[in-house]
Amino acid sequence: MNSPAPCLSRLGLLLGMGVAILGALPAVAQVAITSVDYGTTTNGTDRTAGNLTYLNQVTPVSYVSSSLGTYSINGSLASSVSFRRNTSAGNANSANVYYQYSSATDTTASVIGKGDTSPNLSEVMLSGDLSQGIRNPFANGSSSSESNIERIDFYFSGGYTVKAGDAIVLFDLENYGDHGDGFRVAAFTSVGSVNGAANAPTAYANSGLLVASGTMGDPVDTPTGTNAKYLLSTTTNGDSLSSSQSLTSLDYNTGTPGSNDLYLVGILIRFTDLGLSVGQTIYGYSLMAGDVTASSGSDLVNWNNTSVYATNTDASTWGNADFAGFGAQIARPVPESRVYGALFLAVGMVWGLWKFRRAKPYTNICREASKAG
Image 1 (tube, rainbow, N blue to C red):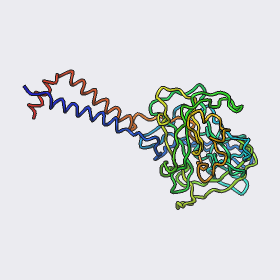
Image 2 (spheres, one colour):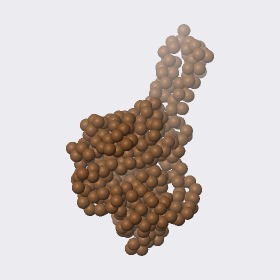
Image 3 (cartoon, one colour):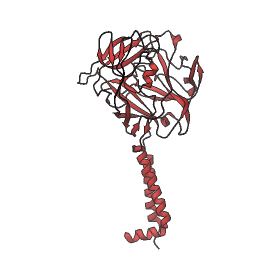
Image 4 (cartoon, helix red, strand yellow):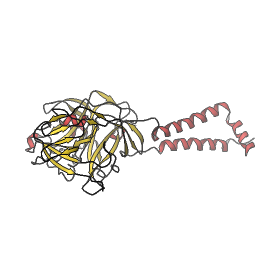
């Protein structure tokens, strides 16, 4: 009688291949965005606030691509975005927002994207609009160019339950040739009153993920193409952006990339990379400077704790992540992504072998294999 061992070893090899496919799925904590697919531009009513006119020509992001596959920007949207400042530290109380613009003078400008007659920082980060964002939010100092934000909290009312593959997507405005500035991101599991603020995180899942500088991708298209003109609007009334804007040109991107030209680069961070489990409920996530020194999640709760949140973060190091008005809506993998394709292939192989084994006992399989060989 033929021994079943060679046949069983072949079956074992196929099963091992399935396991290997599963094991080969990416395990990195974050991946670069390689491209952006935009939806249809809508042209809304112009709105003027102080020295700025918002053209409300909004081009939404439909999909982003990465080494993990294609992700759709269609998940839950944060209820609010809050900016936590240590107002007792003696630093400025400013907001610095960058905009793609269509025309500008020394004192006024028409900017492309979303805005109303009383804009604020929360609206910028909830906009999903890659034509605008926050410049050097975590930089500390007495100058109005330093926003002195210690933490940015994205809050989901009622909570969000982690689903497999779901992720946060963030974009940074960078000089040509650079690949993103560093920061820390952490998920919070409960909210309450902290330092007099409601719906503030009262517990974090852990001390968070430190994203190193240089881990984002190559430049991606902006809503108006690869070349864009940017200006900086500085206000000195906390989160309010509605008046007394001081405008400064950032670059002109004339067509030939140079070290002073600014481009968008992006990163995708899965919730499981933040130490969370599928099915776990959180209430949001926070962005903060990379020099935050937390040994546990509880260290992150009080943004006025200067032993954790430094009040001298430099604009040229951990204070210079220029976050685009994005990240408030959860990204979800499309079924055809590489992750899901590999999973389906592996599961299909195992299922097929199981069905084949039930249909023919291994002794018959081996006899037929011997005849064929």
